[in-house]
Length: 72
Image (cartoon, rainbow, N blue to C red; front, side, top):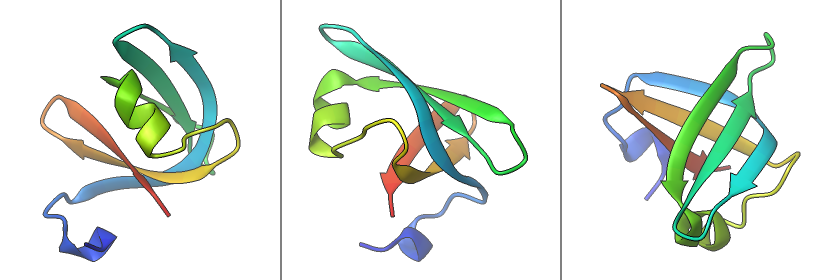
C-alpha cells in the first residue's frame, strides 16, 4: 500500500519531534516544516512496528478526530 492509496485529504509531512511511550498507548508529536505540532495517540505496538523515532520523517494523516502516522 502506498500513501496515495489512503483516502485521507488532510496530510501533514513532518518529523517526529517527541515520543512519550506508555505501556499500551503512546503520544507521538510530529513537527511540520512550518513549525506546527500534530500529536497522535497510537498504540505502543504501532510505534515499534513503524520503527518511529525522533527525527524520522513521517506523514500525519488526519481524518475526523483521529491522527494516523505513516512512514515515508
